[in-house]
Length: 136
Picture 1 (cartoon, helix red, strand yellow):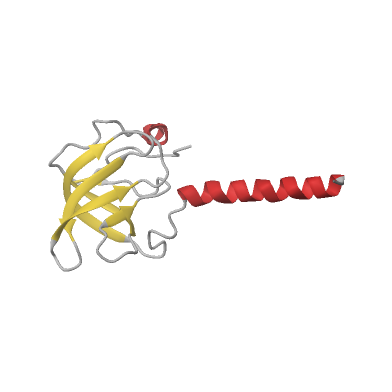
Picture 2 (cartoon, rainbow, N blue to C red):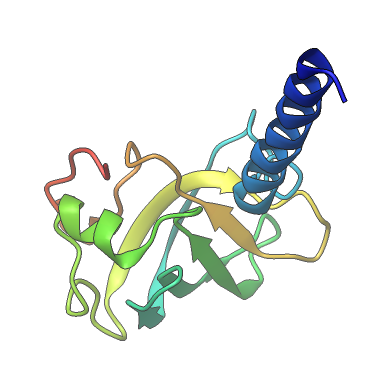
């Protein structure tokens, strides 16, 4: 095999591996990236665990029916959220918070993506739950 063919083979393999890594953490097929939704609800669960922490709140849907919403921080791990100030005590079960993010695409799925650190939940009095900043 010639050197140029070997180089091409390595380049194709690398491109494939990179695309797989992005696909694993991609959210574009799950959430409406062009839409934002604001929810005010009650914290049901806060699991500050790896590989990805998650938050569940009960809040009304567009018709006013109370639903359990899964609030995702995308591909963020505990260490990423710690850099913004999150801890396992950030949310108390039963407290009221407001979140803003991208809603799930699939009908009947109640999920919201808060990605990149720009959208930080606020408490009932309007104060952010963490100071924020870069996750990385």
